[in-house]
Amino acid sequence: MTRPLEIADLASSTRENAERIGILAGQALVLEVETWPKPGLVSHIDNGAHSDMDADMLRSSAHALTPWFAELAAAGAAGAEMDRLRRLGIAAETDMLAATKGVNTHRGAIFGMGLLAAAAGFRDSYGIDRPLGAIIAQRWGSAIIDGPVELHSHGSLVARRHGAGGARAEAAAGMPSVHEVAIPALTEGGRLAGSDEEAARVHTCMALIATVEDSNLLYRGGEEGLAFAQAEARRFLASGSIAAKGWRDRAQAVHDHFVARRLSPGGCADLLAMALFVQSLEP
Image (tube, rainbow, N blue to C red):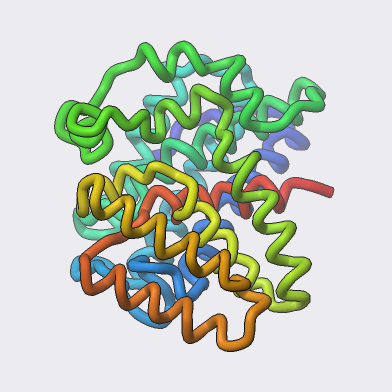
């Protein structure tokens, strides 16, 4: 890995903060993996609807990306524009693919988590008391929407077929799924689950699936697959979620239904990790 000199050029206190942000971002990705049952998704228990990746690969990917999230935080602290952040994201993706032998484990997270890391660096450097999503929308929202589009990515294919906004629209709007859905669900899940933090993460994952127009679900299952996934998650939540007796068996049944249909809400997995990261930065 050849890293740029964003961090080395910073004052020691800012450099240490950027490195802390990078570590927290990587840890959030690992926490997402260490959550089960998540419908259709890879976890420390099984590979979900995926035949090309497992938990160890996702952990290796998170480890490879951690220093890049620190670089993105440092770039944000230095006031970087979107072009600079995009170049760092491309470099991060290269290291991710090297760590996974070509498997796309965290491309969506590089984009979303990378922007949050940059916003966290910017917020700390400039002493701004605003949510990270609001900073992203204000500083880089227009450049995100107007920037280059990968014509053959899953997200762009889904956007053309189904008119879904995907990660770009989410980021440009200020990460509403993170701030308005996932973080409140983590808080509610913590209240329902007590000391069981994994249960709170399962509750949050279900809340995201029930709400988000996940590009990965649309790519794998079309509009019918998305509707099925959202209905399953809503049914789980309506029946008491993690506060109901036998909730884990019911969550596993939802997971099995997703696997049978090869549905994997990868966008919601990324949003869960992003919410965990944002929450970890709060006092």
